[in-house]
Amino acid sequence: MLMLLLAMTACGFKLRGQISSLPFESIYISAPLGQSIGSDLERAIGAGTTTLVVHKLEQADAILQVIRSDNERRILSLSGGGRVREFELVYRLTTRLVDNQGLEISPDNHIVLTRILPFLNTQILAKQAEEKLLFENMQADAVQQLIWRLAALNPEK
Image: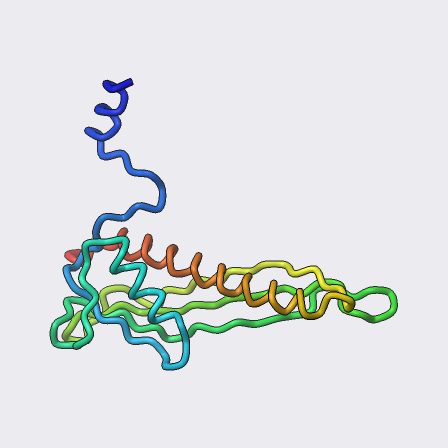
């Protein structure tokens, strides 16, 4: 068992979701005010990587610009009586990565996540809370996907 563990660590094996570093030492996050996406990205990068999140543009090797982060709810299906049966929840995140000179490192990066929310008129308050929780989970998933994409970049090319 010990030999298996040593062999797996020697080959660079890591559990899914563990990213040790991004291809730059420091990053500045530019996100819209009033949205939690900026603080979520800062927390995830600060806790999950060796990259330092800075609060001054001049100190950053890269600048992550959050262009768009929004939620959308669409009617997916109706009952025979014209009442909503299901909603489709859509979360969109668009970012761009530039260096401290403003040169593009990575073009616009689009992440779109969807979930289906069954709806009952008798459970309106519970469904509102469930919708909020689903949007929070989709944003957390989008942050993780974005970090994986940033980790895969090779800015020297």
